[in-house]
Length: 229
Image (tube, rainbow, N blue to C red; front, top):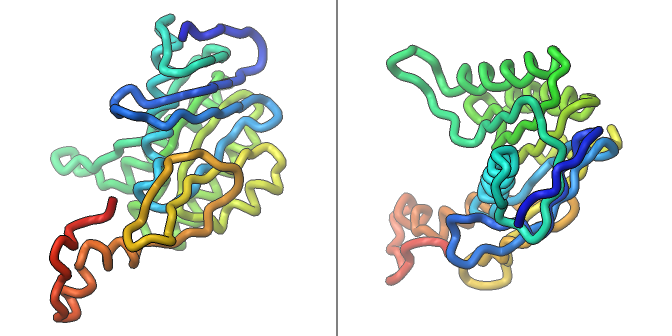
């Protein structure tokens, strides 16, 4: 669809947003604006968080180029700085660790915010390259600043669901989640975006379904036990 370009405060409104690189994508809708300008996205691994952020990032980039976007409806105000922290890696040749790379990317966002630029930032699981306590403190430092911002839009995925209640208290944050269906032998995902904060913790179940727990405990792996769907 050809996006509608707006003036004034920076909203992003997407309906039927989908990923261009998935054969049968599940569409999602998101509305961010001045009243709720930050999305806090939670859910277990493989449920769709990173894919959703990439879908939103591609749509925003194409919209800024004046092209059609993968959605049934898309309205936005152009930003001055579009940041993505989705595929961060360390730099062994430059001597830069994974966590330092994360810190440098967040610093770039903070500098643009301090300069008064209209910012959009997409961040996938910030500060996962450090100790859990440092990750909590660093994530709260950054996310609370995002929530206080008056001229930016932010979408952040995280497993640190403990931050959700504090972010909701700012009254500037929309919380959404992806879920897994746990009732069957293998985990299943419908990739539907829902409201609220996920409380699912499925890491150990994934290890069990992959047969890793049985192997490490000296038990035999069931025939066909090769992975999670």
